[in-house]
Structures are given as structure tokens and as C-alpha cells.
Length: 71
Image (cartoon, rainbow, N blue to C red; front, side, top):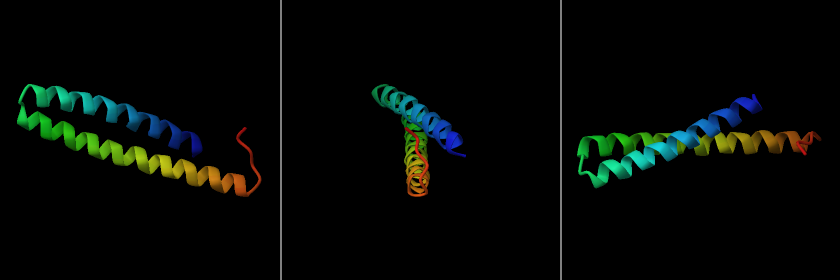
């Protein structure tokens, strides 16, 4: 489960970065419809990135408190 969280976190980070650059490009070209779509994708993927990051931290904290080590 931990590896899945890491993969999903990385994937959402990539989508967040790509959608941000597409948003900036659409904003500079004055394409309102595409700008809104890319902004929506950006915020959703940013939320998922934070969510998976928190889940990773919870998993690590739980593992460390049980005595497991990831070092």
C-alpha cells in the first residue's frame, strides 16, 4: 500500500506541474475556456498530491511508532 501511495503522489505531482504550465500558456493566449479547464485540473491534482502526501506521512508515522525503519 505504501508503494501505491508513493506512485500516486508522484503521478499527481506530474499532472499538477503539467496542468500549471498549460494553464499559464492558455492564459497568455487569452483562451478562457481552456484556461478554466486547466485551472480545475491543476487544483484537483494539487489536492490529490497533498492528500497522498499526508497518507504517506501517516503510514510512515504509524510504521515508525510500531518499530519499523525505512532507513
